[in-house]
Length: 289
Ligand code: CA
Image 1 (spheres, rainbow, N blue to C red):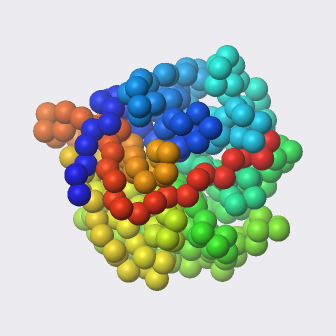
Image 2 (image 1 turned 90 degrees about the vertical axis):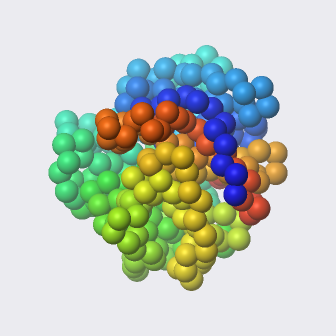
Image 3 (image 1 turned 90 degrees about the horizontal axis):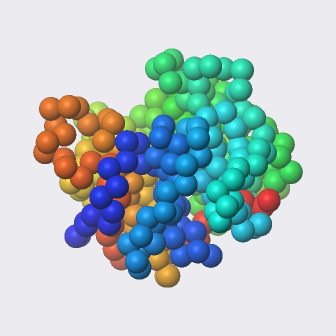
């Protein structure tokens, strides 16, 4: 599989890629710089929106703007004017935590979690944001809340707390928006990196970015490793399917995790990478608000 550099963006902590089908753009964030990137694969143009605070995840909404997870809460970001509008605060009383990855469930609610910026274990949580702005705690005791996505039939939720070294799977109650019966789905072997962002494709395959492992794994719904895509950087963060027919795979990465002595050998660390793996993704559910 040929992996190419789509955008030599040198993101410090590139994250949260998601395809905005309405605008035909690949959105992603550079978390601590507070940047939202809007990449046009046709023109190769990259528009950068400055949020003014850490921004860790983004989702297009039914209203035509974007929902973003910022350091301590959720905001709407207007793609045309660039202004933000608050939705709900999260852990605003905790100075050492920030929000991290998030994604919409099949009903258009947004699930996103938190993590400690001071390397405290189990200091984070996973939350669910409902369209009206109500925030509900789903899990506590999370170390680094990361990728979350649903099986194509909507009955399962896959979830990564990077601190566990695993991808877990839960039963999903779509009406209630609740997770139950959490159990291990895949444990990443020691030395292969840490599970970070995660996405489920149209066939139910589970794609996991291996932070520090320089690769993306695809797992079958039964948990078997299907194949691995090796990357020219050690710190991929998350993948997203995009393009007109969702057959383009994009990978964000970070240079902040690359040890200083290794940076010379990874000139494109922090870049946005692209390949066509032969399997298609699913359109991201819009946030219903
Ligand atoms: Ca992440």
